[in-house]
Each structure stands twice: as C-alpha cells, then as structure tokens.
Image (cartoon, rainbow, N blue to C red; front, top):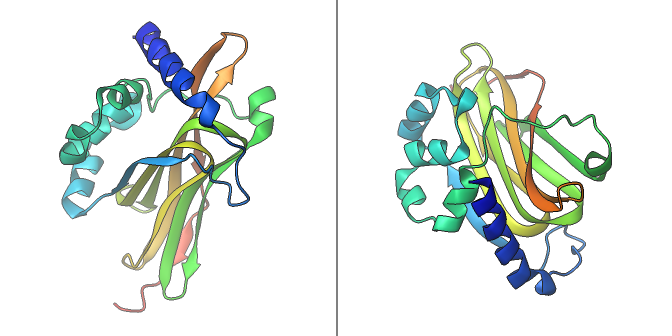
Length: 207
C-alpha cells in the first residue's frame, strides 16, 4: 500500500510542482484548491460518537459518517485517506520539519456564541493538508460539533465553526495532517499531530 501511495504522490507532484507559487500574504497559495469541507449534523454526530477511532483511519471515519460525500471522492484521495490513521502521530517536540510549523486548536466566546477551530500554519507550502476540529463536551466526552477542511498547495488551513451549544464546559481536539518531503526517505510522507485546548465554560443566553 505504501509503495502504491508513494507512486501516486510522485505522479501527482510531477504534474503540479511547476505550477506552485510562493504562498501569498493571506497564507493560502494561489494554486490552492479545496478538496473537502465537512460539518456534521445531529445524526452524523451520533454515528461519530459511536465509533472507537483509536485505531481507525480517516478513510473509515468519513465512509461511516459521511457516506454521500465519501462516494464522491476520487480513488487517489481515498488511497491517501487510508494512510491517515488516528492512532499514529509524530512527536511535535522534534527538530527539522517541526521547527517550520505551527498547529493547534482554539476556543473562545464570540458575542453570545462559542467559536472553535483547529489550524495548520506552515512556513512553506504543503502539497496537501487536512484539519479536523472537534468540539467536545468536557463532562460527557461526546463530540457535539465537528468540522473538517482539506486543501492542496497551501501553507495555512483552518477548520471550525461558530455555534450556540447548551450551557456547559467544552474543549477542542484537533487532528492535523499534511504532506511533507522527508529527505531521509527521499519521499513525500504524511505528518500527523494532535492538539487540545483548555476547558472553556460557556453559558448559552438563549436557554
């Protein structure tokens, strides 16, 4: 599978590398293209909370929770998703590639609402990035809001939303994936890191 994945990535890069420009001031490359944008509704959140994602891939999660959107993805994207496993993450305290990136999750009040988001912020353009942001009820552990964004050739990507959940305590968990060139393996590889926020107490004024 890794060999097939590497071949696909190599062909993809050969076709596109010459058209890549330096990231613009807005931190989104002019050649960037959205791959996928997802927001979970109530029924999809129920399915998401029923899954044990510890050893699942993003391929499996999107297939189970968003079957309609999954069916529209091309074969190349599905192969890449099958390589993106939740249980595998790199140590963000390392050097080299880690010195050139910022990633994280945030949660804050936004007027009478609550705003949450997760982001990738690089000093270089990645051929492809995915960000998954989950708003979690800190008392129950349930995911109450879910957002995902994926795009090609960009140095910045953010997923999140503004919501009015019930009064309670909330936190955000982010999963961050992007392609980077590993000179040791002479190949493009997926980097996966996770982020967490502090607990945020929110009072819904509309209740």
